[in-house]
Image (cartoon, rainbow, N blue to C red; front, top):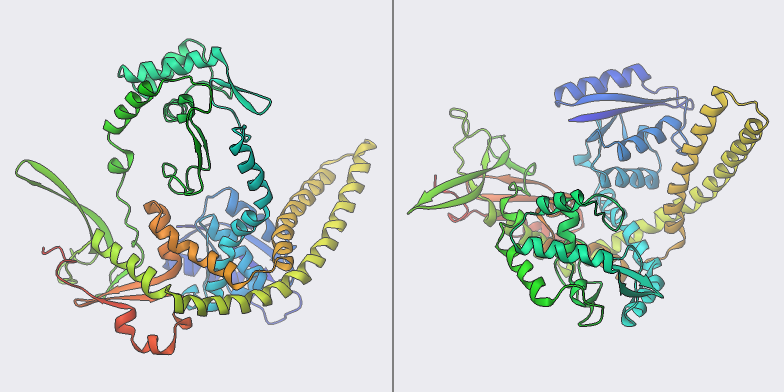
Amino acid sequence: MLAYGYCRYSSDLQNEKSIEQQKMELEEYAKKNNIKIVKYYIDEAQSGRYDTRINFQDMITDACKLKEVQAILVWKTDRFARKAMDNLYYRAKLEKNGVKLVSITQPFDSETAEGKLMTTLLAGMDEYFSQNLASNVKRALKNNAQNLQFNGGIAPLGYDIVDKHYVINEKEAKIVREIFQLYIEGTSYINIAIQLNMKGYKTKKNKPFAKTSVMSILENEKYTGKYIFNKGTKSVHRGIREDAIIYENALPVIIDKDIFEKAMRRRKNKPHAENTAKNIYVLSGLLKCSCGGCYTGYKSVKTKNGNTFSYGYYRCNNRNKLGNCTMQPLKQELLENKIIDILTKELLDTNNMQRLINEVNSQYKVLQNESTEDVSEIEIKLKEIQNQMNNIVEVIAKGLANDTLLLKLDQLEKQKKFLEEEYSFKNKVSTFEINPDDILKILKKDIEDLKDSNKTELKKIIQKWIKKIEVTNDFVGIYFYLEDFLPNQMVARTHYCFCYRISNTFKSGK
């Protein structure tokens, strides 16, 4: 694992670890845990009260944009940020980009349930705000759709937009027809792209054709005259939403329906990418064996009566070490389905959800108060930065530019952008009132995604809610991050709520 190291020494506390001491302990931790620290970000004599620390800002920006590390190591959580709002905001921002925050003296396994709950909430709050603030835009788009009008973006190859309506561009339509004909005749996506490029044809964006651009044209039903708006979901693009707007014979036709269907039949007969893709084990990293080892996924391929069968399993990594573990492998599909079922029906049922809602509502009010204070401070800081930038620009305009001034201007621009992003989010938190129904929608989104997600997304959701899963000869014990919020009577029934007896159907029988 690659990581950044972050150290801060605050001038107002005299008993702090020195920067060198912090670095030494970070290095020791990294060595023990097979982590390589690729870069250090250090802020000396800086307070954690308000995050205008330049190196801190650079670290967050680099971690989210460069995507070269999977973790940020800090000596203690208050080295990262003292205020709850800042800690949660930046941690959620990092996790959204696949970067984990690790405190070497306060492991996040012991993170409070309240903190984990609010991190979960904040991770989805930006999307929630966007959905609510965009409601007027959505109504306008829906109105356009009902009038068969173009809804923005780039028109498909073969069409132009005139007075918000689709009209055929015959020069481009000729290319579209050629693509369908070549595909029906058996030409591959790549070879179609090669032939088009040899003729000098370009996509709607005036770029050479590629496999993906050919595929998107072949699956676009608009060419048959069908008007479609709001069809797919975020995770299942081929699905159809309940509120989708679809009109047959509403657009000028470029491809006859029988030709389109022939192309679709050929696509259906090709091996689907999901069937040939690498198997994803959604519980990897969570399954712990009673022997002390960890369960990892593997595929078993068997041949019977001339037919080949492939099965997924989880197996303890100590099983092959002589005498260390005798635990039987567990069937992947059955175990994953059971964990999803428990997560959906047991932890996130109506009664437990209400307790989570109450806690979120309470915690959100605390964060709102912090955000209100921060918004005022950020406004002042942004004005100061803008004044400094204006002064530098005036000096540069007089022909007095030098490397120092240009470097300072670049730093101020980065600070400004960083603070503007923070201001945008915290201003929403401080001014936006959420009610229990809103919180329920945010928390229930994960339940919906458990039913409507590919395995990569499913893995993220499961690992957001489940801390670890312990496997013994008889039980699978599930430890949730938010178990503190469960009713006392449910905690007493731990074996019912959090453990599942392993039947022989879960075991491989090997």
